[in-house]
Length: 191
Image (spheres, helix red, strand yellow):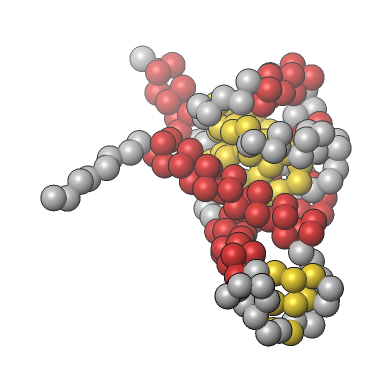
């Protein structure tokens, strides 16, 4: 018997978001605890039947090495996905900014990641900024469009969904809203 599961694109984004959230947790572990110099030596089996990989003074079990492998794959998916993906740390500072964010909003990763004023760059209008912050605090998984200021001053409308992760960080997923909003407004105003 074959089951066919039909999901809306929003549900697909949220499922991907949940998977990305798990990957982000792995990235956090990798970035904060597993970055070691490049020398890798495979040592003799450790306790039990587990083979251990020794990276200088850090030992990784097969499961930990597999987690690092999966994390690197998810990192590539996040970075090259054709949707906007990023996250806020516990203090509300952007700590993840994928290539699509760079492409759409024109800010390089090093200009945004770790910059506590990044959101003010995108939303200089206080009313819009407060509306965005409210959307983030409510962790609305529904996509809501906001017009941001890209680097160079160009206005770009992106729809964002927000997902709170168990480690108190926040994932944001978005897509660029094309000019069809303007076209719709023009066609309805002519009638």
